[in-house]
Amino acid sequence: MALASRQRRNALIDSMRALALGGVVIVNMLTLSGLAYMAPDTRAEFLSAMDLALWKLLALFLESNALAAFSFLFGFSFNLMLQKLGHAAHSGISMILPRMAVLWGIGLFNAIFLFWADILMTYAALGLILPLAARLRLRIIAMTGGALIIAGPLVLMLSGAPVPGAVPTGIEDSIPAYASESYAMVLEQNIVMATTAPGHAAGLILLRFFVLSGMFLLGMAASRAGLLEQILSAPRVWAILGAALIVAGVGMQLAPATEAARHGAMLLLHLDMVVMAFGYLILISALLSRPWAIGLRRILAPLGRMSLTGYLLSAVLGQAVFYGWGLALIGQLGVAAVLAIALCVYTLLLAFAHLWFSRYLFGPWEWLWRSLSELRLQPLLRPYPSG
Figure 1 (tube, rainbow, N blue to C red):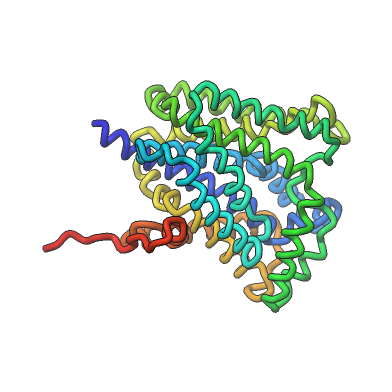
Figure 2: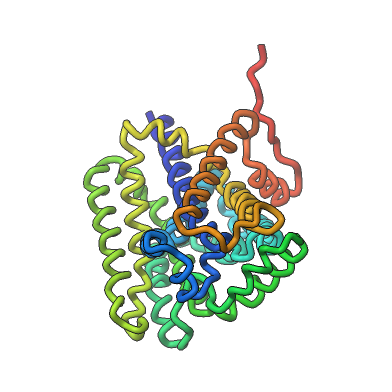
């Protein structure tokens, strides 16, 4: 019975991770397509009324929420890894430091060769707090995570940093650079964007530092406290709570719509990403835990097991569709068309994950991550029963 519960839990977590990855893929495709590079006025002239409405809906429901949810799951999964290690978990920083160092290197590769707006380097740096936090009591971990999240907007207010935006403004010249048929031009522009964009997005980076760190810790605390088991025990009640949090998050985003900018205490409304992320996580876990969702979990779980590969491969596919060395569709499609492409890419990732795991134990980038972290080749081929 315990084994069945653990297997269901792992499939559920993998499925949730796959869905969070789907949200990240959609948001990234909107950037790779060139739409996010356009100034608001240019985008308003370029898009149809339906596309503009869809743009606003995606910004409302996905923009930073998927990343916040993925960060929570990162901390959640880290605690599960510690539970598997048992007493070996006391090695803490010596165990995680090589893994985070390799992850940072993979992120650097991604930023230069694939997608400049990499999140892996941030995860690698912030992830170092997890082995340290693992030594603390549950209550301290949860309180510290919550304090970091609340501190984000407060520090933003005190620092005077600009109000966060998803993509720096005034970078429309990126579109012709990425439309070039020269891959060398792509690499050059990626380096330019990766090194200069942070200077134009100081507010966003500052907020993410606190919020993502807090989500890491809250994910670890939730895993240790058995939150998922509690959700599984009363899925209907938790589903209602999740839906209520999503509604509250939408209200937080819409509240300052009449203001020129959020300022002072109103900056706390930027925590809508956290509220909505928790809403999504609770609602989705409650729904996916139901018996009728077994088939859906089977479809999603393999991609969740290779989320690093899915993240990197989606950038490759995005380049192939939008950049000049591929189909060169950057700056030419509306939001609906880009969303359709993102869903096609996601479907391909799901199919690839199922095919890959029919023969192999780990995703290709997950295998490389493990092998480099431990400085020895890990087994990859799935063993077949003899006879």
